Amino acid sequence: MEKILNYINGVLQEPSSKQYIDNYEPATGKVYSLVPDSDGQDVQLAVDAARGAFAEWSKTGLEERMMVMMKIADGIQSRFHEFVKAESKDNGKTIHLAAAMDIPRAISNFRFYASALQHFSSESHQTPGTAINYTLRQPVGIVGCISPWNLPLYLFSWKIAPALATGNCVVAKPSEITPYTAYLLSQVCIEAGLPKGVLNIVHGLGGKAGQAIIEHPEIKAISFTGGTETGKRIAATAAPMFKKLSLELGGKNPTLVFADCDFEETVAQTVRASFTNQGEICLCGSRVFVERSIYEKFKASFVARVKAMKVGDPNDSTTNLGAIVSKQHHEKVLGYIELARQEGGTILTGGNALKMDGRCSDGYFIAPTVIEGLDYNCRTQQEEIFGPVATLTPFDTEEEALTMANSVKYGLASSIWTNDLKRAHRVAEKIESGIVWINCWLLRDLRTPFGGVKASGVGREGGFEAMKFFTEAKNICIKS
Ligand code: TXE
Image (cartoon, rainbow, N blue to C red):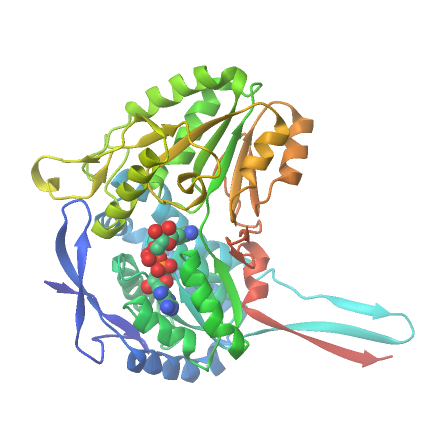
């Protein structure tokens, strides 16, 4: 069985404990590789390596830093199909999606921050005749990056790239559920000549390796994406140590469909928003609110499209939805579907696990599920399910739509579908989310601020926001 290795001080190595965790292929339900069960000792080795590398990396010329990051991007590009296959196998997502979204985006993350580092600048403030202040933006030092399983390399690199670009040394941990592409990335970093210790990847469990990263006193900033409950625990540990924290947490995102939308485009895109990556994206629009005058027509069209989606082997190019990431998550999603039934919901399509033939007969599949008839305040409509489950709810007025949209504890993303420009602006202003898409969904520009409000997190990633997070601003005042 293949063993994944930690990447510490430029070297691929076994965990100190020599213990491993099983790594499953969700489409088959079978163990196919072993993940290091790292602990505090491995994190200490990574911190020692990062400390050793920091003095040089933080002073490395911008062009040189850019070149090595570009080489990492090129390294992923040159092994594109290997990365795509690995991401699909590890996560259960379709090969098609990994090739169209995950791996291209990981490459872009490195390229984007490699070029951004040449343009990142700081402010100066002049008081004529009195003084000039200028701000230095210095790297924080050793930073921790912890990422989840849903967009494994995409989100891992989204943190690592700005941290490296700003001159920090990194101790990173991918999800133990989807570690494989992070392992491939460590190989690419070696090939690209990234100096040893600049990036260290420690694999393992959240409560063990992850917790050791959070608790380590020399790790001064933590960038985390994952569940809200984990985010709370991380904040509770890190806040008393005065660490900088960027937390990208859960979502329960509303989709507001008004009667004057472009109907066919809206149906197509809202289905995509609900079910891309099996609904396992923190940005997925899982609560669809539709103006009553078009509700029945919308419902018929939405459900017809969902019924036409093919669930199956992620390797098959005709598959639209692959496997759910783990057995545990499969059970959790099915549990929510059962809850929806108990709460009085009507299942319009789906609502069950699916059994495949052949190599995927033991995989974790769920039919894309659409539910109506639920009160907007019930648990199914309030809690993050993070699976292929969407609810449809009619509304009569804009105010009612906003009340329902804003009723959840989360506030990550939303989408509004209308041709009324004034309404689009008005609703966008009032909606409680960090990201609003109007007549689109997941249309990304890497320069924009990315993050949520309420229980969806603290801080913003993206563009210069992430570079500000990974630097300390020091003001220097010179008397005239
Ligand atoms: O995420 P966790 P899980 C949601 C989704 C899902 C739920 C739980 O609803 O069902 O969260 O998923 C590491 N100290 N999202 O359990 O636990 C962990 O090893 C330090 C939303 O997979 O939050 C992994 O690397 N690290 C989401 C990462 O945190 C710890 C994406 C995320 O794991 C840790 C994923 C600890 N104490 C799940 N405990 C989104 N919004 O993008 C865990 N980790």
